[in-house]
Image 1 (cartoon, rainbow, N blue to C red):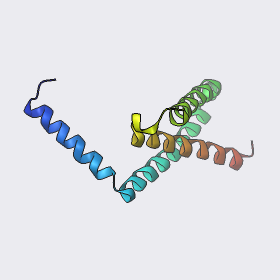
Image 2 (cartoon, one colour; image 1 turned 135 degrees about the vertical axis):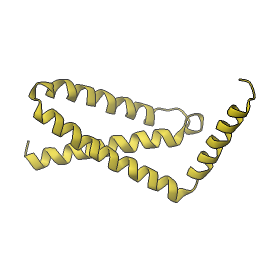
Image 3 (cartoon, rainbow, N blue to C red; image 1 turned 180 degrees about the vertical axis):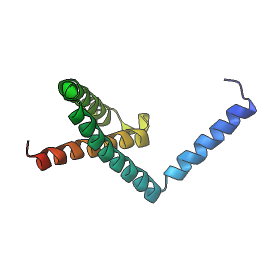
Length: 111
């Protein structure tokens, strides 16, 4: 790429954002927000699919594929330094929150 002012500006913003997330407390807070958003997403999926009874099997299959894909990305045997660790941790936290909310709703409904 050319070294334009816009390119330098976006690189500087990206570096500052990554530096901001290196603080452990900020990283944990962003991961908790992702976990809670995953919990909300799981409740929303269960509520919407519960209202429309014909989507049950297809949405369950799509949810299974997405969670397995995130698990494959997170736990494969590639060194964590080669990939964006924060992005994968956010995805994994979102998956954990969504899965936990679906299990909790299943226990609440007794099914």
